[in-house]
Image (tube, rainbow, N blue to C red; front, side, top):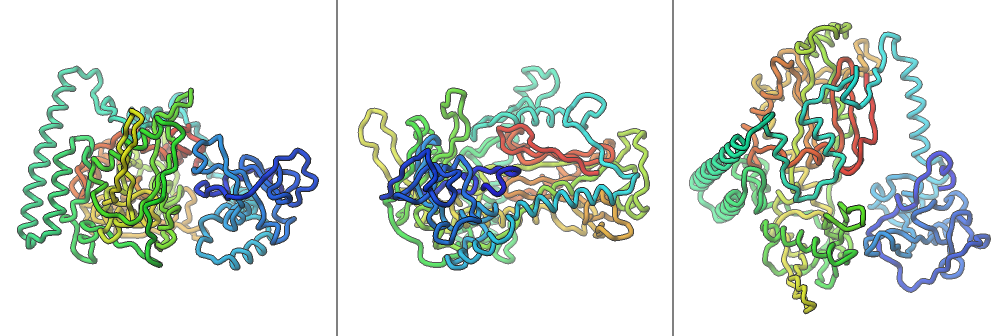
Length: 612
């Protein structure tokens, strides 16, 4: 937008939907002379159908404040789209109403989907009469930052720490954390193997490595044997119903096909460990029915969006075959097929695709328009910050009740009370949850048998048996199931042996006499006065922290508790380090809390902030 381009430049493509295809039957002409292009003439690149302005998604958009309502609805763009087949190609189409809102305010594409055209037109008109929200946000943020610095007492200051591991300001990171930060800089394929060196002893011999492998094999055999005994004992004690038997046999065959590190034949919730109250056990076994506004559409004619090359297409087919191999796709008679499109994940310097992501487009076949899904909120970066607090020589409760007394950080660091983090990454998050059998007929998948001799490649239709990535209801159902699992894992909050136990809620609010800006706004305190263990869940990433000293680390107690109460899958280490660190890495040092923010798995840390 030209009204903000000077200080807040943003490419037009960031406001566009890349799953919309081209508009047929239109003609455009690129022009260097833009005098007759009307609205947005200073940044347009040509015209459509003679006089409609055309813009490039890689450039700036028009100044919406200078156009009439009719002109705003006749804006055209050359945009990146999954229908183009290649990132270098673009499709010609009209800018939608929701995208107009997104050009003016970032959230336009998501917040206003349920509005009618008249409501959106009215909203656009009134929004354009006021500054964009991003300008208001920037002004308010800078103003409050300056007020905060003036209001802070002179004795309180923000310690500036540099994200390095050397020098006087060294961060208290362990060997695995250091390796994790290094690995986070490199993208990993979805099927990347486990880096066993993280669990190796210093100067470990080959005999020790072999012995550890054998122990893991025997531990896995023992686990499968006891799981089978547990499952069939529960089945006989609960009526031996056909649905229960079918589900248990499916769980056991997947467990038998796994190993210590991975679920090679897919995973499924051990539903018999869930309580029957509120239908939790039935939901874990059968899945949750979706919410339908109208009957779902029908049709097997929707074609997959082609990949950029034959190699990429074969990788996509391998992804689909893996779903079938893991019993996530089943035989059936679907009446609606969901097309897929590729998202390149890793490419080498020559542009060769090394790994690719397969995304199912339930929007293009019209299924998502017939479904309704409850909205839900996710934690923010601030929630992760509040999990950890600065080093203290006394419990957090005593520190707050004492009026936040000064701390002597020249004492032995091993005696200081610190925050210990834990991180859990749930692999194949959506695929862990069954899709209800009533919904599967609308989630067909085209399965192509590859022929490399140039002959015709036969196609068959399978249907999804688990939640897929692309259905509008999948995120809510999977997140709901994850929260249920975590609630069961956390146990009784009144049990003093529980790391998640708390007996008091301390409100540390601005304006109160005891307000301490270096501490979280809301703090749960244990019976012993220490800060209770807490966690936040970002869909499939579970971040948490507990308090303790080096001599009595809370993380050991926490690890034993979580393993004891794990319900949904075999307790095992994470499959890799780099992927789990994408998002944020929080640490505590002396009197400050710091965190790194990673934009993506292939990026270096892009942000850093310290909180006193």
